[in-house]
Image (cartoon, rainbow, N blue to C red):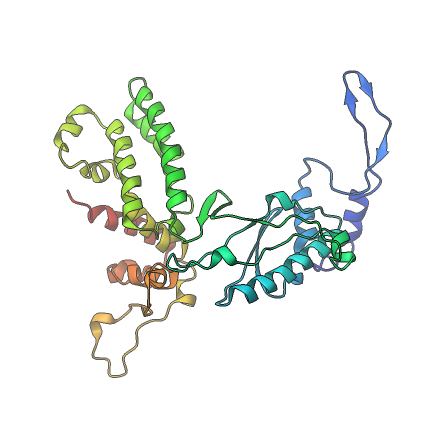
Length: 357
């Protein structure tokens, strides 16, 4: 807490709160002897998560060559490079630093859950000869790795991080397949419910169950190829057919994409753009550059953002390219709207209006 800037008297209050506690184990009607709690925080306490975050706050400082992304007790480290051997060597040094820090701070690393993923272009095939990475235990590091028997970190082609499946080519194909499987399970339940509950209730269930699954991390995986987005939209249409009556389905027969506008639900391709603009609303002025012309002759580009040039499809799918590119397609009154809630409503109405009638 001192490292995080928490001084007296709050620091002393937390010390008193965490110390001099005991615990007992109950089996049936029998209680064990009382033992003092020498580490950790009271289970289920409101202060527990904050105390843990304060405890691991200094972990990021030990990483010299990698960037750290932490969520609760989960740590993801990233480093970019053109020389694979050198990059792996630097990451290995950071892994060793994390092991030492964990030992010094009384935390046990779960090496079995640690995975190693190389993200690269699909046209490069040298990863089979990539160096092995090790999560050395402290005893191994203390002995200078003289008699190392540590298992190498498992190298994978896809890793699940915070519910999102990231593959080695950033194609998002594994994550889209994962979502499709979840939606197919829900679809059968929606089919049976459509005979028993009103359409309004079914639509409410759609937004709480289906839309939440589609919308989670959509501003990231929505940058995938159109063929994968089409798979999700096909499943969306199957859900929408259950939300409307038979007469509406007959009207839309032959072009069920009209159901999106009728139900006022954005297809995945447009919902991705909607979330992209909405989630970056507060930072667009800091991260994007307005187009400037010295002579003031290009009024058509007034208020628009600079779209950076890219060399490949990886660059084309980056946030710094896609965000200004999409914002420039919006009408000026929406693009310059200063109130976020109004911007949100205008944007959704504009995207719904762009759908075929």
